[in-house]
Structure formats: C-alpha cells, structure tokens
Length: 105
Image (cartoon, rainbow, N blue to C red; front, top):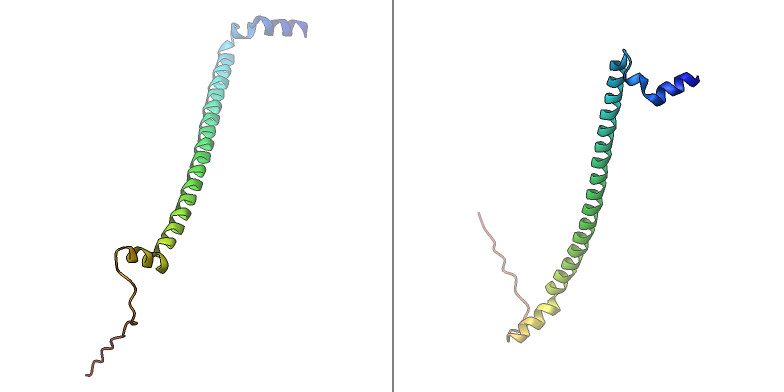
C-alpha cells in the first residue's frame, strides 16, 4: 500500500513500460475537460444573449403600446376637430346624405 502511494507520487506510472496506455487516458481526460469547458462557456453566452433579447423585447413592447395610445389620441374626432379649427376648417352643419344607386336589368 505504502509502495503504491509512493509510486503514484513519483509518477512512475507515466514512465513505466506500459505508460502509453496511461498517457492516452490522460490526454483523453484533458480533451474531454476542454470540450466540457467550451460547452459550458457557449451555454453561458446563450443565456446572456437570451436575457438581453428578452429585455429588448420588453422595451419594444412598451414602446409599441405607447405609440398605439398616441395614435388613438390623434385619431379621436375631438383632436382632429381642434386641429382643423386652427386652420379655419370646421365641422359641417348639415349631415351627409347617402347616395343610393339602383341598377335595373
């Protein structure tokens, strides 16, 4: 037990005759660790991008609601009447007449 522990501390398993197997395993573990780190980094970047896009969507939605309410105020008859009175145009005193076209065969 003591001798095996000392061999591990001295890294005899890396210079012995069957060290090629050990080196392959170490290289495999290293490559696997690098792939895991890259994958984690990529996932974290996507999470940050999703959060940023969600904030942008919220801002655009609130801007849309604001613009829609402004448009509704502008389209109101009272607002249009006020703007036209400033230019000297007022609402008609007589209501409009319907024109009916009757087509006979």
